[in-house]
Image 1 (cartoon, protein in one colour):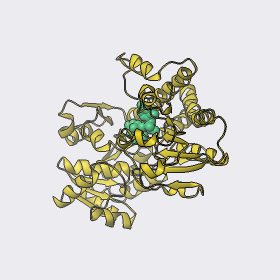
Image 2 (cartoon, rainbow, N blue to C red; image 1 turned 180 degrees about the vertical axis):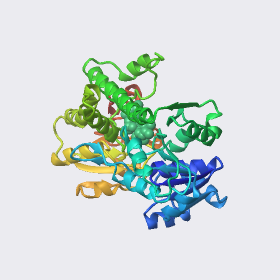
Image 3 (tube, protein in one colour; image 1 turned 120 degrees about the vertical axis):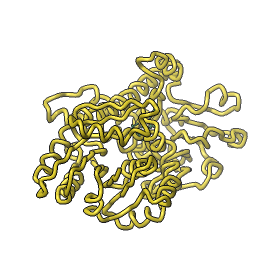
Length: 432
Ligand code: UDX
């Protein structure tokens, strides 16, 4: 099929490339000229394992193209995927749809024949209706269908999540559109992935509800971890014991520093705002948001306790700075609230980040980037394991122990207290 993907961020670039990889002709378009030129020469602006190789392969085989000529790409395609950003409006916590509607108007003026317009960006319930109303006024009187097809891609696992998804959700009542979407996803769903079609608004809500529920699971286990710390229980036993119940499931029950990233924080706030518009109070999601926002205060107080309230001039090292491992994304990373709080109390901070120095941290004078783990941890009084990169799983404990006072605060429970005790290292985990 001939596909046009509008927006080449995490969602658009991964989706467009994967659609090309399963045999479609794809043009990914963006207004950012520099970005498009880079992409056309295989330079990828995001850290996503496996993406660069897949882009280069499909560019070479001519199935994947990049362009700034949106009109032309729309005219030549049967399916148009809207993958532009829907950032949060700070004041109202609602999703900002201005880019979505700008694209819808662009599609309207190039709707020369029947096309399926697909919203893949995370959009509030009823957005598809609004796009439909815009397109109805197209001067060609062309027929079309507006379909919701939300993505469930995790950063760092996006290609895998696209190629082997738990489910493909398509929201439309048009039989013609369902048939076409089913044949588009055939190479993926034939491996027994569930192809689930529902109403358009239903598909729009499934995305928000899924992220809100996953965020709830994470905040739930983090609060259980708080309780475990008070009654000397190991949270990891609770996660295993709970997860063995098929109705609960073992995934997304790892206690940690709280959820970050671009999706959970944004989508939980957006679904609460949307619900309010429909006179519904999502009290559980509201408390999940508050619980997660409060988490950095809880972790900060734990650090105060670990350092016996002596933070001034202490050398604190963060291993990892991004919101989770296998990504370069700093959006809503827990360290962005923890580091300033520690600096305010006079701490000196080093960090090592596998994806390199982070511009978000340059503004803090007493935060230094170290090129490797050894330099970062050399004179540390406290080492905070902030993300679960594999390279943090084999720290040279013998070398670390040379620094007698070192303490490890393992916010990802990578290590066991027993192993640390055996190596003579003072160690704190989460929920232990
Ligand atoms: C999420 C959803 O998983 C994905 O389906 C959606 O399309 C986009 O948002 P992402 O934000 O990339 O993906 O990361 P994810 O791996 O889901 O982790 C989200 C946050 O939860 C991270 O901060 C992570 O550290 C945290 N997390 C995840 C935990 O604290 N514990 C867990 O067990 C799992």
